[in-house]
Length: 68
Image (tube, rainbow, N blue to C red):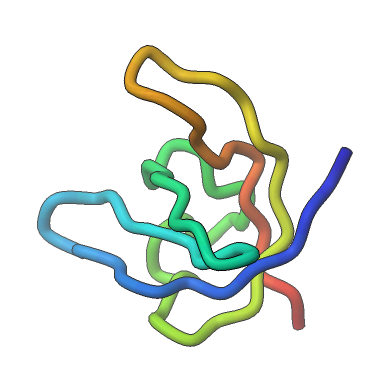
């Protein structure tokens, strides 16, 4: 199921960030961004849509897309 949230932080040099969703933060990696621009499309405050999965270190966001 797709969910919506807001990019809270994105570390360009390290290629990962966090999405704010319902009071919780979810980790995401640039490889999980579906935009053809990749991480260049991700900016703090951007509205995004994503899928949540269980990763090795807890929940994480994948298939992350910026909502235009």
